[in-house]
Image (tube, rainbow, N blue to C red; front, side, top):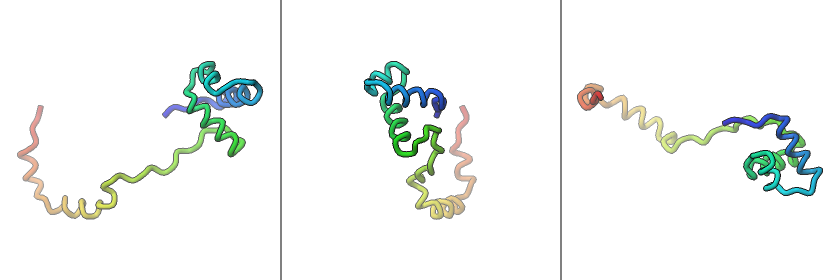
Length: 89
């Protein structure tokens, strides 16, 4: 994911707070998504800071709860069974 520079974020926030303009007009002016501008304005309102937030923890996959079972099951399978089923292209 690419981030907009802190300078651009400040320009967007300043333009919104100084002028009688909408988020859609700012999005068109700065060629950004209105959702992105709204996120920046919400972040500034909540934290008084526009620096990019660090990514949070990712959600574990659906199989994570069954990881131990899958590992044990995989260990019981003879590897030779899969060697004959692999085809090369």
